[in-house]
Length: 84
View 1 (cartoon, helix red, strand yellow):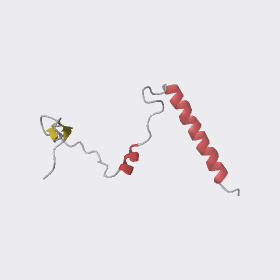
View 2 (cartoon, rainbow, N blue to C red):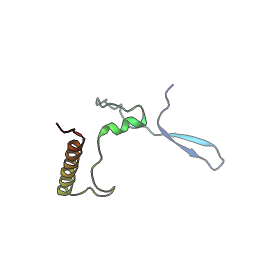
View 3 (cartoon, rainbow, N blue to C red):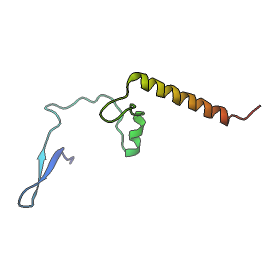
View 4 (cartoon, rainbow, N blue to C red):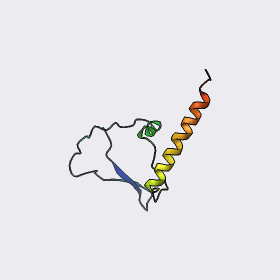
């Protein structure tokens, strides 16, 4: 039997009570997205946006950072290529 989502609260007497909280009024349709089975599969979603938790960086700064990363990757690729 699958457990339903809910919140576990402790009462003043020390008992634990499971308060059921349904996710929606109706069953939700599956959208086809892949569901990660392990924590290390969460990184497959891509890189987070540049900036802080509260504010993303301005678009021109993000573009400059991406250009610098591309240039650095090209520089490392040239270093690792043996001369002819």
